[in-house]
Length: 342
Image (cartoon, rainbow, N blue to C red; front, side, top):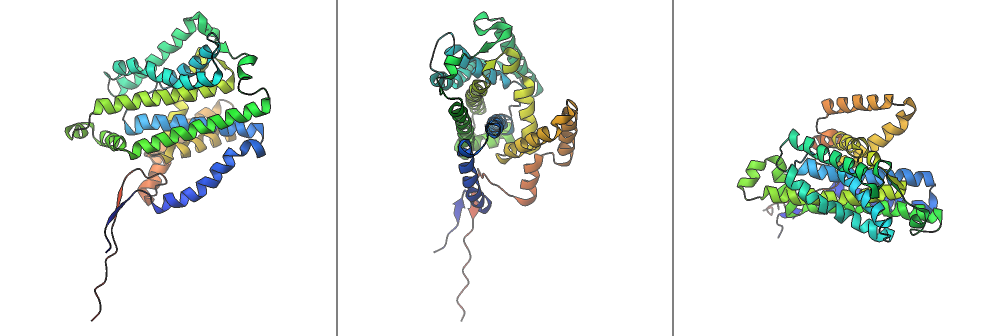
């Protein structure tokens, strides 16, 4: 007997899985068939996707529009450099501790900034990031304003050979990006994701239905801070040097990420991927125009927001109901049986 059933996947998501798996396999094998420049570009795309997914989770679902996520990129980077430098810790162990350290620091920050609402919250997170940057520039053991550099002995712990070291760093960045995307996707498919969706749609209504809005936002804020710290450690492990201006740069680690999410489609998992591709393409095409390319990107962003306020993928979702990463549940109605002919 046929019956209605609840489905998670869609036809588009199943078809996308068949396309995505070969692409993922090619990216994993890139060190064996690609050039070092290609690995650096794809690695940059990977950590930007991770940062965009984390900011999208924070702003697009939890409603926490932060302009200070660069704080945790810098904290993760500085934790890595301090643990491997003055404390002489193994680079792999230091990298694993960079994320939890950023998450731990975010706990008192959350209690402070959660007292603010709307634009005040956004400004408050930016101020906190500036406080971290100024503090780092005053601490001598962190290199003060000059920052810190990794010694040859430290990055030889990754691999004594440069080619294999570049390949390992690329694979670690790709793995971290996949891990972040998987965590965000599974979180949104869980009951916590349902609570986040309810908070995004209407915080008072979700609270009246029993959703603990403060606890949900608090957990999401700490989780995104920890994951951002891990990505930050990987970023500056590749750059081999960190300074307050680079580690806590609002332009590099927040403004660009917000551009990706807004252009791609806020509140969707697909949006950050689309936004990252748009940003990288525009940057590569317009790079020869110097600082003018920033103005052109701003104009493109304004036009895109006027024509598609929900972003590129938001427009696709609204028009075609196409979901490559479905997080909700759908009721599939059973086909009705025709009565037997007399």
